Image (cartoon, rainbow, N blue to C red; front, side, top):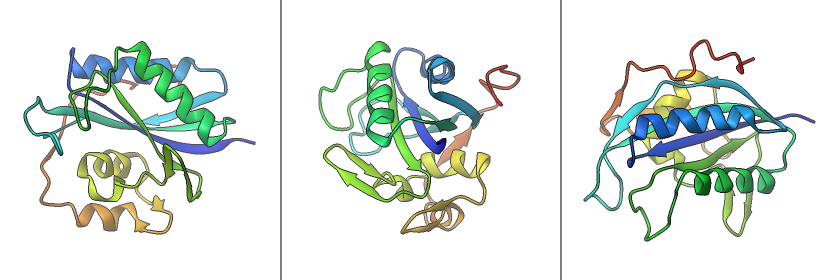
Length: 171
């Protein structure tokens, strides 16, 4: 059975736009994963630890037969392949991949909470998600549009670069 999954992507090291674009292409190559659509890239200020460069963020919609934990494991492996290290919480990173939504699942286990527990508070997640899924609902929280209105004071800049436009892997 295919599941709809939304994944958040972010980077602020080693050419962040190239990192996010590469991650989108690598996701499209994965067995049991089909990229449905990709948002534009967005620039945002760091959250938590502020003494670091701005982030480039995006959201992709996937179809997959992977279970939630298996999906997370695939994303963590891709982060490692792209040079991700975890020095401290909210540290700068080459690549950050988060399972935001998995169907309408509400799930919590060690290391994995769906929906992502902070997504409704982060304009850098909500704006790209609104772009590709304007009617999306965050299970247990409400619509993405309502959550985005609560984050209107957060500065997020949509970049003109569209990394996956015309990409033959999109279906």
